[in-house]
Image (cartoon, rainbow, N blue to C red; front, side):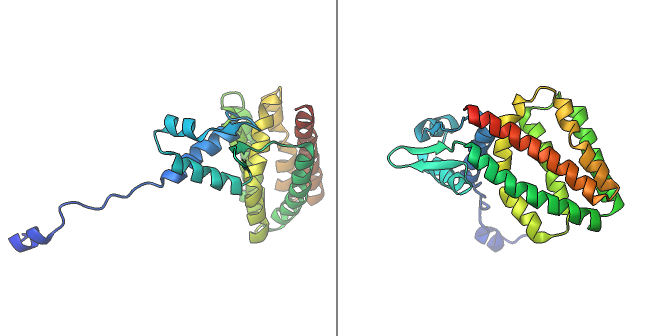
Length: 230
């Protein structure tokens, strides 16, 4: 097929360039810095310094900070800009009270609705956590931990429950990230998920909920203790 001179003359010389979501890129980097603990609770976000390090203007940094404020990771201080939110023992208790009830219901529904293969995958997830516990970075271990609990939520088959758990993820991830390195035996920590997976594979709702409640209550006490000392 040949192109006539008329067609060549009217064809655009360049194609449109898709500009990436600059604010989204800045937001992702800032969120990762907070969740990994590189920016500590209470620490001020210095827009000018962040912009300089990232090679961007202050506008996308400010907009990214606003987005993270809406997620609960940052707070806005009049005349002082943004800072990483601090965490109080009361906030830990409040979050875990809701999380525990939500996950207990999710586990019960999953035991009823999920397939045998889907429930068996939970144990495989624990294997993965244990095997890689000592070689992964802290953010990677936190991701695997949260993925296990997120999988239970997804297997519940309840869209609203799953969405509520998804909405809690950012704060749950923050608490996990700030406390995960305070545990001694990382493989033992990963193994605490095993009784939950085994009970769910057996479709034993009572045992699954008992194991899950013990796991989450222990985590709540540990995290609350850390922030009580802060």
